[in-house]
Image (tube, rainbow, N blue to C red):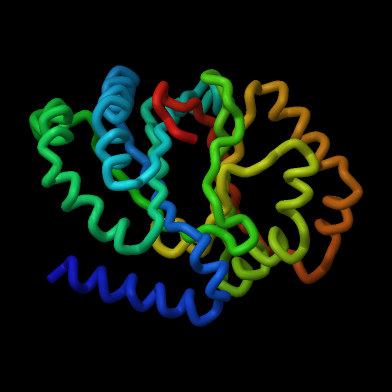
Amino acid sequence: MKYNIIKRCLDFAAVVVAFFLPATALSEQVVVELRTYTCGTEAKRDTLMGLFDRALIPALNRQQIRAGVYASSAELNQGEQKYDTMLYTLLVHESFDSFLNAENKLLADQEYMQSSREVFEAPMDDPLYTECRSSLLYTFKTCPEVVKVAQSPDRIIQLRIYNSYTIERNAKKIEMFEGGGEIELFRNSGMPPIFFGHGLAGDQLANLTYMLSFDTMDQKKQAWKTFVDSAGWKKLKADPQYKDTANKITNVLMRPSKNSQF
């Protein structure tokens, strides 16, 4: 029953998206699921990350789902200790059906179930993670792909979530990136995105979410300085139609796991 309700809701969402978007754009855009795991300790976070590398990523790849795995820390996030036990996964689905069927396919994947026994057999009072939150996103028309940008194994991943207090302001913020040219300003400043996505479901709506990647922290700092100092950004920022489009910005810095695909 629960599966059927979710499927009907997502089928309806797909129809709505198809109605408003050109067929060519719809065929290129993908569904992105961003999961946030809260682990009890850094050791548990690292154990879970290792299991995701060895078992989850290969199992998802067998479903043609690409995946990124990332760990955060207080060191990266200006001393905020809550990040020391945070683990993130990025799942890229080529269709809504992929998202709907992924969990059941994992349960039927005996290789995955065997390789992940440490997660499933952990006692209820001592699990590897205490909470998992999920956000469902749909990539932008003008930036439909999810791509690996920086290549260094020590690269920095930057996750940013822009919340708006109404869906109208969120639509305007998305327009600012697409029609207003903010994405192009990002690229010209040395910040090509991993992805840009419009929040469809999750606990921080309404929002747009994106990820950037840099080989080093110094590269990140210089790229952002170039962007903030650019004439294009100053002009766009001053445009009154884009006033008050984001009332909260979440900013998280992370490092990828060894086998992360983004």
